[in-house]
Length: 114
Length: 110
View 1 (cartoon, rainbow over the protein chains, first blue to last red):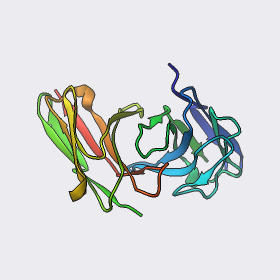
View 2 (spheres, each protein chain N blue to C red; view 1 turned 135 degrees about the vertical axis):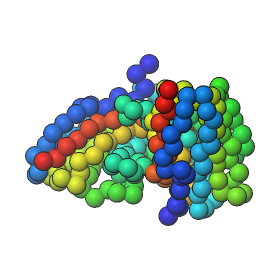
View 3 (tube, rainbow over the protein chains, first blue to last red; view 1 turned 90 degrees about the vertical axis):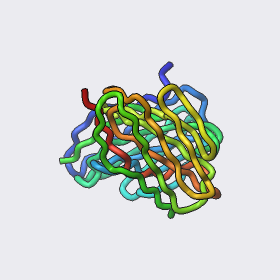
View 4 (cartoon, each protein chain N blue to C red; view 1 turned 45 degrees about the horizontal axis):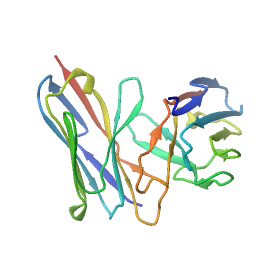
């Protein structure tokens, strides 16, 4: 079972460049999330989606945009990358919302902005 | 927002030892999960436990929601238990997102 798949796994960007991280899940989950993890810290929620065509801001949304055009995909975009966005990005999905259900994570995407 | 504190921040054990990790949270929650992040960065869900006690092999967890804490017990630790353990909580009225603690880094040595 693939579960939650993120691409790319590694990327180096120059300041000001743009890129998109793709997350795909094959569990028919309604809810999807993008988190970032910085050294020595827990995960912080960037954006999330409660269903196809919906998105909402999380704890640290500035500098990121998202789209959920298909139920199985959740895209995270950086329009103009900054060094502060160097981080490990995790996508996750769950059914019926995090309240009351298990959340499954992808393997992470390591992004470096130079 | 809700605050999640985990203790201890770091823990070194010899293989075979037992340990208890603690998670305190500042508000009522309707969701609490424990995760293990292995040295390769992969996050694995260990328990969904907003209240009560659960066991899975050498691991068990207890959440006392009324006192706002949860405990993760690791018995007979193995080197493969090394990594970072995160507690994450969901708050009533804010379904669809979790707030993570900063984790407990566990190193199990031979």
